[in-house]
Every structure is written in C-alpha cells, then in structure tokens.
Length: 303
Image 1 (cartoon, rainbow, N blue to C red):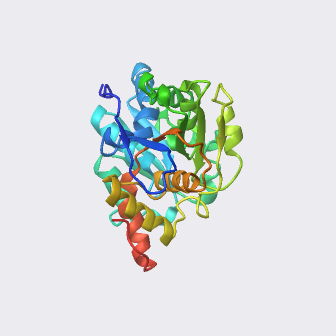
Image 2: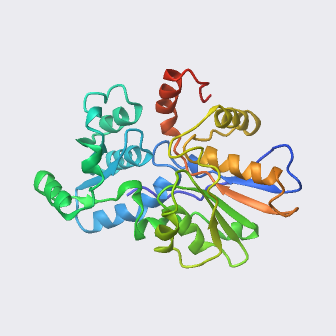
C-alpha cells in the first residue's frame, strides 16, 4: 500500500502586528493533491484495516463538495478499492459533470448513491445501513468526515518530536477527529486550540469521546455564520495571505482558522514570545466549487 510518506514541514508565516508572537504552519496540505492533510491521516489506518479484513469496497458519506468524498475516491483508485459515496442531496443526481468534486470522484471510479437530506440525517441508523448492505453487498464503512478511533490514531502522527517547542497547537475543527489526535499527542505544557468551522456546541462532547487529555479548548468566534459560510472579509484575508506567504488556504476550514489566529494575535490574546503551530489540513480541492457559488452571488473569487 501507499501512505508511507515523510512528515510535513513547518513554514514560518509573515504578517504585520505580530506582537512578538511567532506562527508556523505545518504543511499537511502538501502530502497529496487529493488525499492530503487530515484526510490522509484519517484514512491511513482505516485503509490498512480494510485491507487486513479482506474488503474490496469502501463506502462513505458526504456532501456536494466534500473533501472526504474526493479523498476516499482518490485513495480507492490508487490502492485498488472500489468506492461508493452516499451523497447528501437527491438533486445532485444530474449535476455531476458541473460539480468539480463529484466529477473528480466519479473519474476515480466512485459509484454514487444520492439520498434526500431527510434520509441522510438517518445515515447511521441500522435500517439504513442494512439497506445499503443489501444493495452493495460487503463493504468497509468509513464515517462521514472519516472520524473514528483509527482516524484519531492517524491524526496523532501529525505532531512529531520537533513540534514540542511550540506553546500552542491550532487546527480547524469539523468532526473532531483531527483535534483529538493532536490533543492525545501534545505535551502537557502545550495548549491545543480548535477553531470550529460550523456552529454548535456538540463538538465538545464528540471530541471528549477520543481525547485523552484536557489541555484544549474550542474557539467559536470564527465560523463566519456556519459550515461553508464565508464573506468578503474572509475572501480578502485568504487572498492576502496567499500573496504574503505563498500558501493557499481553503475557505471552509484553514482560512477561518488562520483568520482567527491572526485576529487573536492582533487583540494580544497570546503572550508575547509565544510560538504557535497551526495545522494546514488540506481541503484545497473544494475551492473551484466554492468559486462557482461565489460567482453566482457576484462576490470576489478566491485567487
């Protein structure tokens, strides 16, 4: 199997008003074009497990522009697994060609099952899963977003011994798997800060299922209205960040996290001399789809 890659590098960031704080970005996005960042980490041990158990097919869940769907499809093509994506939204059935994420996944060989949003909400029910097994036979199930115990194990490998010098570890939060791995691997003198990309306080409980330590907290002030919600201010920040650091951020996760970190630094919420390590969790494949929506709304595009 693949997935025997070197650890990513930490790149120091340049920005005004640093107030004596150093910020580095761990370039997990550079691991692979589509199986990148936390998607690579989450899938690694799940794919080993699927292979060990003799499964030939992977089945997972996601929305129209899901980084996870693209990653599973790409990994399946690379490793010889058949892949099935249960997609939220029946209306997407005839829109595959115009959707960059679904089009890419289909080119990788992924088979789709489109379901209504109402049905999708019950995707982990026994009845729904049993119906999927009747329809597709044997498959290895990977949850939406990829988070399970094996995913957390993979995310624990993001941090290495060289990262022990940082005072703060920061990451965007979706389903809670990545931050759980970071919490488990972090040192007692480090604080792990999570920046949720969506509204809701349910993440605290989800993270607590996997996190073995308690030196972490979530900062809920930078979701910009909810999952995949953005505005002109965030777009301008992402484009300026790319110009100043030559690093592309995605608008759903890492863009919001970095906006939050820089805003907190300007507000002097970090002690002078602090060293911050932020995790770039990838997700760049979703930018073309986001730009399509921004263009319809006559908003500036992500460059």
